[in-house]
Length: 281
Figure: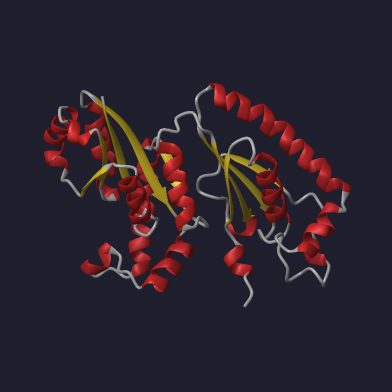
């Protein structure tokens, strides 16, 4: 049975980056095939060893129908991979790379293009087998994630620990959320206000508070229980999100601490969604 990965997502979320990773893994890439000819292509893929591992890249607005066609086809193992990204980061990516959104060629301003993508994402997301929010992920981390899932690493559990600020909204791909707002806030110490949870001053401050060790122990106890059952159920991609007021101090500290705790047991990533707001220099 030949493998097909249906790849789609909002423009700017990293489809090109992850496509290059698939190429390195030996996948054959097929881009922007109209849905009307997709049934014939499915038959060819199913009966041709040259298409043993194939990635079909489609526009987000066509992805739901493409997924239906693929999963009705015989002789194919289909995985629908959907990439998303928060609008503020997409705006930053477009302005830094000077790329043009495909819909801008039709006269839409960039902000409207991203709004239309967001609307399409809400309609398509329930059908994805693997949904990845690339906000805060580097190109290298996204490549590593692709290799973890699709290069003969079946059964490998991938865990992403992400910090965020509640005042900026809950992450789009939230599964498990730990609220870190019930421990002392370094923000109220003037010497720590401009630092982040990656800075030694904040780390020392929080490490000295018994409440932080107590909260961390509760997190680990729950995750040990949850992850053991998730592994038994065959789940191999877990998002763990940690929130505090602004996503600057406490959530960053706990995300890093959990990453350090579990990185020897699972394939782990750590992401700090709000860090760009607090980078200095």
